[in-house]
Image 1 (cartoon, rainbow, N blue to C red):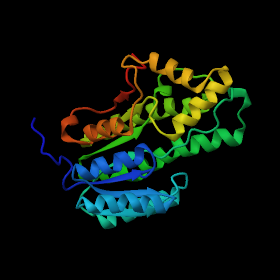
Image 2 (tube, rainbow, N blue to C red):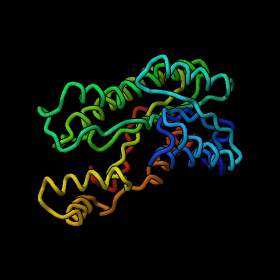
Image 3 (cartoon, one colour):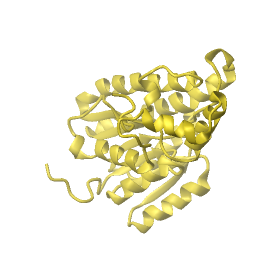
Length: 265
């Protein structure tokens, strides 16, 4: 199959967490590929910046205030997307999430912390799928991509609750793929490894302090654990999301695509 240079032209995609880190890279990669965007989140200023960049590429971009942990808020944002793009809402990307507290064992987490991480990472993704999937199923076409992580493939020290949310997302993704597949709707995941950026710098710094090594030594150890011996970038993740939304992945569903430099092999 030969894909056009703008494989998402004429399609609109609903994106949560669309501005910061990999969310911004994903949003702009989809705009460059021709997609119009519905950018949903709570912090509207950085989202407006991404929307302006998408418009400069010739795309339509709707900014929707949305708290992914609140059912009514997600329902309103999806309704606004349908109103703005009544005939071409063709997919969603669930980027929004939190890492929660790091450096804690499972038994050190509070119930409040547990609920906050699960609400942001799991409930938020569930709610977007709850309201977007019926639209795609009615149209008998479309694709959803959820953002997971390598912690959904292994146990993890000092981030057990966060890791548990990634395992849960894999189950939701695979089950939704089975339920929606008969209508031609695909549901997949992209699971990044360590992605360069402020969050990773903070996490590696915390881990270095706990392990009693320098930050540089912690970075070296991580890189040595990867087959490609490099961190992932936001652009690496964006390219994988674009692939799964495009017709190049038309026969792929229920899968979890690792973008981790070979950390999990």
